[in-house]
Image (cartoon, rainbow, N blue to C red; front, side, top):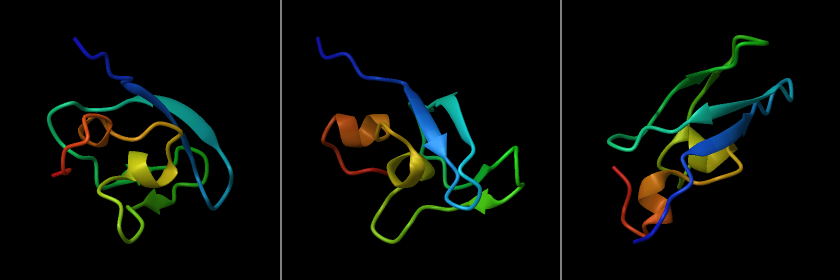
Length: 69
């Protein structure tokens, strides 16, 4: 059985604030509000979610080598 990492540290590209979050396993997260500078993060072109763009661990779907959302 394969184990997936469900914690990812998101880094805000505007202010550099970091926070470890638990990723959802049943959906992609398209928006994330930085609690420090209030910037709304959105996935970068080519990425499926904010964890793939700004996290230190890709989302569970990508970890499973499946297409994401």
